[in-house]
Image (cartoon, rainbow, N blue to C red):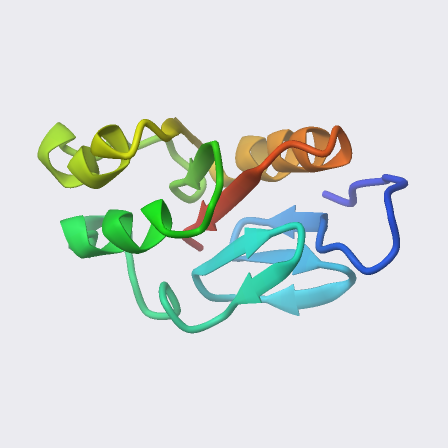
Length: 123
């Protein structure tokens, strides 16, 4: 699905998504990633699937300076075990879990509002 948006130049947005990929500023990415308005992290989640998520992944997310993390779990919604998300709870950072399409759309809205948001996307 192609997303239409208007936002400040120089920021990262999702411009589309499909079953096996997302588009970030028009670039097709078929691997896990972390996105903030100012940063595209292609390495931390590159080969991570939902089944192998660890507490260390959420610990990394807690250091991004975001007030809310959107976790896109692929084409289907999967909730991580609460023990994995402890670092976010301890840092008082909100976590919203949704399928990847919903995470892309929600991220664009929040980033467009200037919110401190990060999206962790599993493809």
